[in-house]
Amino acid sequence: MFAVAVLLACAAARAEPARPRIVSLAPHLTELVYAAGAGELLVGVVEYSDYPAEARSLPRIGDAWRVDMERLLALKPDMILTWASGTPDEVVERLDALKLAHREIATFRLADVPVALRAIGAIAGTSEVAEAAAAGFDREIAELRGRYAAARPVSADLEPSLGSSPARFRPALRIPLLGDRSFSAGRDGAA
Image (cartoon, rainbow, N blue to C red):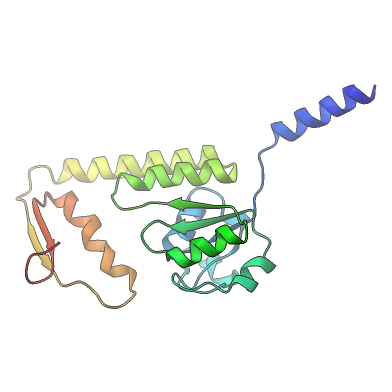
């Protein structure tokens, strides 16, 4: 009888998705967590995580470059989402030293956004919601590509931003939709 009870308990544990306590180390990852249906699992974020509005009420553990490890540990996270091109190596090394589970989420191109949504959904146990968000994103991008398919290609020469504004990344996402074939950053044309 005891063996049957143990088997039933194990089966029930496998049937329910894990509800990990998640910390996001970048504002865009915070937004993706909400889009993937896992906002209620966020227990901590970094500064400038202000979208959606619910994110504003979450505990802050630093910013995208500096993390207060004591605050982070106090939140008892099960998973920490790191920014592939932004979370400093020192922070990742410290997470490793503290044996904290973390996952790097890359969003370098538009095609990375649905991949990131699906990855977060898998981590959070919200795969259905994440899949719907990823499919919706793919549909919107396809619609925009179709709308601008016949548009005259554009070229851009953008000055790189020295600040930490998320707006500095937006042209890199928008220009490929408009058919750019010669995107560069900076006056000398160096990308």
